[in-house]
Length: 169
Image (cartoon, rainbow, N blue to C red; front, side, top):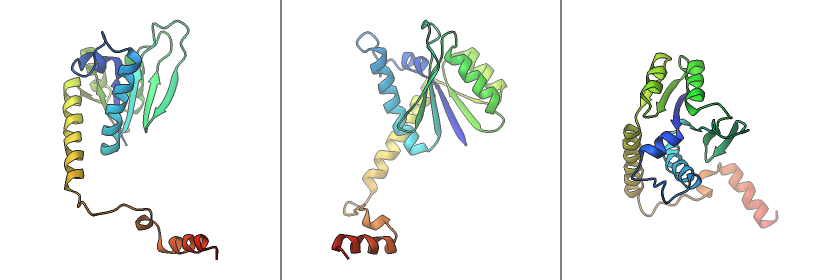
């Protein structure tokens, strides 16, 4: 299994051309990042975990949500995204392939020492853009008259049963 752990706020702050914190709320930026990485996840078929730290939020509890096949972690009070990521890499770095997207040099060093691989925000951006180009090309190269109907994707026996049901037999 391959994982990509993303330090969410770190990437938002690094991708200045995508996120404008002076005009957009943090919530809007988080949603936009999730949307961008959702397309990437769907094409690459890797497990993505985006970590947003809430270590400065009084009384916050760790919260884990799913967003279109992406795991979103909001850390608890006094836990940074770095802490969460380091622990994850320490536990699973020798079992799974784990890449961590962050610009934090110390975090990158710790990840490398524990069996993970680092990815800078710029490298992640390049990967996402390359994937978007591949998806666009793949879609454009599809024959225009091909249809993807339910009937083409169902076992013929099941299709016969559905047809009988439709006719009331």
